[in-house]
Length: 401
Image 1 (cartoon, rainbow, N blue to C red):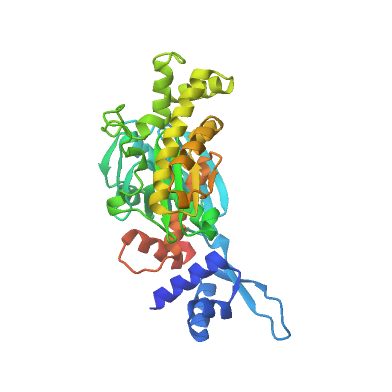
Image 2 (cartoon, helix red, strand yellow):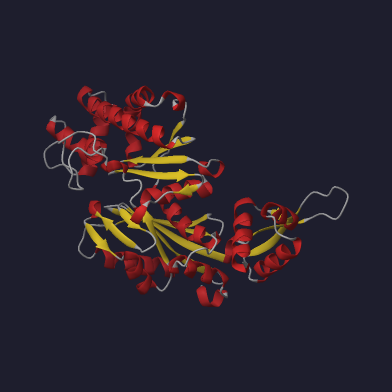
């Protein structure tokens, strides 16, 4: 019960502070004596500090409590097939540093190199007197976050206990999730999801992904299988997909599919890489090329119809569209909107859709939020990685810096 109270108080201060002790007691329905004892421990440990006084109504003004953002820090990373983006944040989730470097995730030694890069960042971004709580990692693939098992066909990674491997090497907790889930977690903690309980985050680009926030909780499904939106079959016996099936949504609207269509239409040369072909196709559409614009229009229409199905199933308050594919959104938008509104369940037709500017640092910050979320969560279940984060949060800084 003491641990639950501590987690609840820390979570409330983290999400809604600065806040007075009396307000904490009221919000959590706990006694003032319990709140005084818990907050005294948090202040002594350096996690919480007195930051301000509430306006007085004639009596003694209440002292407001807030997190000490310098008490701890976290590293979050997003892995893409050809690059690695890292973000360093404090306990409030505020970015302190970032790094973006080329990274061949399909190379035979990719995991070894990943461990070396993270170890380097841990040294570069160390902060005397501040606890490093752990590493958050977003991977494009199927992730059983409880077990740390990762399978990423788009990277050529077979199922492996990546979380445990990295944790054993680095000596700190490592939390891993599907990269779109990390984006959804980041939106829930810092973005538009803070004021909404039901949000869909849909991404398009190198692949197609989905993050589901329902009743305020990211839905991961059995063994992390929820959200594999890109592998819903849209066309029977359609184009081959990297997952091994045919006719998946991803095989119709993701960047590799669009480049294949551009090659078939003679718009770009055979053998053009995905990154080069994507840039070339976008440039042709910008210049008014009818064939290039038709490729985007077909993709936008298919994508809109698929998202309409999601809205009809989940009934979200908001749909957020992100990913590198949004760099060509001007060419996808009209067909997407028309198809979405034409196919959506009519009572849900007014759901707003907002498009994010592509920035991998948002995804990496969301990966860091996995660790921060574990810091504030109640220890209801025995989960060694999350427990390890909470232990580092409570430990003296000399042992965790």
